[in-house]
Image (tube, rainbow, N blue to C red; front, side, top):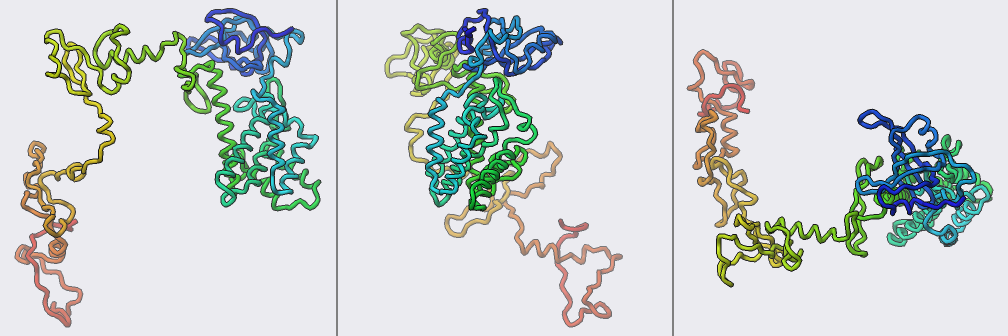
Length: 528
């Protein structure tokens, strides 16, 4: 039985349209609504893509039928959620072998597999180092790695379709070639970087099966593609007598470190620059493919539409429009941007909906040149008199002026000298400048008598809390005098003077003269 309706066809069905078709259950989660009823959150797929679905009031039996990996004959109706297409499943049962063609369910790379294979083999053959060229070509032509040309590169996150591993490897390898050419041989070794890019995921030949849907093998779950890739490389090099050990170590390091961090699966972090570059290229290609596939599935390829929640990003995403193809469409019609411009013009000028002849140009609205009509209680101004200045608009009925927008002359005029007050405002209370005044006729005064005194009396702060405008801060010599001297007349008579540690018997200072006492006011305790 040939499949009649594909996912790409379902996206274009009118809302509420019903159909029956065979779909692969790529994801299934049994959840509960806020009212406590069970439902299935589904991801349904075929070779043309994926589409989200919901099965409301799902029973445990329905959850078993629509388990992940099942092929089901689905009765559903087309629906949308937040502008993106989805399915509302109304019935489902397991599809029999004669009811569908397995080739209709396996999503494949959008690029021809044969063409990608030729490009990757040509890139491997261009390696200048004969040892690395023999190692890479031997890895690609080995009888145990032929699943490399059809396997997926992931199960869900990125390149999770037939030929995904080849597509991902070719993309990373060609970007590595471009990076080596851009930075030059003085920074990057082209052969090490490109060879490492070609074989970095060779272990995924045994980690996944193509499906549908893509799935982990037992060895893939227990060992992982990084370890299997290194083990394969060891065995391959052992069959090549005289292969340089240091070159094998470099290639093994490129495989071991290409995830970049210990927490992301790499047992070591990158130790050479080529491994660091490979880590970033691998991450970028996987992220772009995974996010673009998610956005396309959620939005149906339409621009300026928000998706649902994306777990790995921790947020919803939005599709960007293709500006080269004109304004992006939206569900309620092609005149979306004209409506936006009209509404913006009405909001800025205060006018209601205008006829086509009265609509101001969008450029005039954004630059402030669109003028609103005068208030009804005032006559229209004569030409050249009492006109609003350029760049200002009065709101109709309220005569409210909008701020003037900068013109091109304002934006590109020579920069004027910035007033000093912008960066050095007067200090509170007329306090002296904390910076020393420069010498010469251009000296800045150290006091600012014109500064406003803060109203501190209401808060209980004494009036002499701040110095008067005529006062200056004490200099270093005055502070030293305060620290060293005391006024003997202010010291109580019943407190004996502290003896000098250097004084001899009788209080006389050995080998010196008696120290004079300063006239500083008494201080209780330490000064600071």
